[in-house]
Length: 231
Figure 1 (cartoon, rainbow, N blue to C red):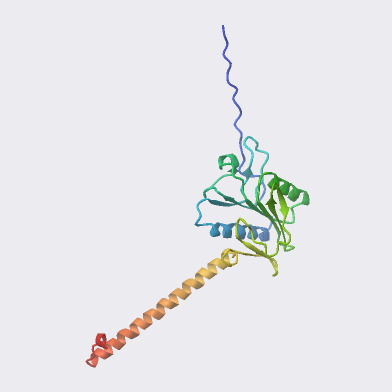
Figure 2 (tube, rainbow, N blue to C red):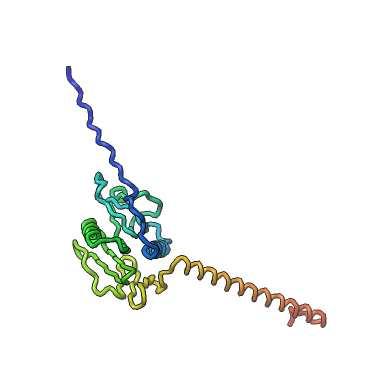
């Protein structure tokens, strides 16, 4: 009697969607993460295959749920927009995030940040930016060949992938879009939208006043027996 070998079922691997750590340690770090992520989202809003995410776990290796990082902000060219629980690279055309940002907080250790740099270098990141808002210190690395190489100087550096420019000449980092407009906070964007709405309302009111004035003039001319359409 021949016994049949039963196929060995591999246990299903779970890829957690959270590393159990908070997105940020303080309001300053959170503000910078949101400003960079939202402005990049806005910058590439019209391009369907640019994916921008904040604090999303990235798993570069299928079958390995231990090797992962959650960049504060990451940008992936060549992948569609949309919600994800995590970025599993093998399900994304095996495309690694090309650009990542990290915002330092007081709790970050040098060892931790060194590990992040090694990770991003090993798994194909093209540009890595590290900003310390407390010290107004920006560091950056850009891939040359097989390795991430330090960007020096970084003041006025323009990202090859994103086209954004970093300016360290003021009291804090300023980031400029390719069209020269500065990255804005949500409050600044809302204020600008409100001002634009007020200006539009004022313009509409002025146009209405001019229309009413023209109607009164036309009525006056008609009372004098003059056809305003013939004037």
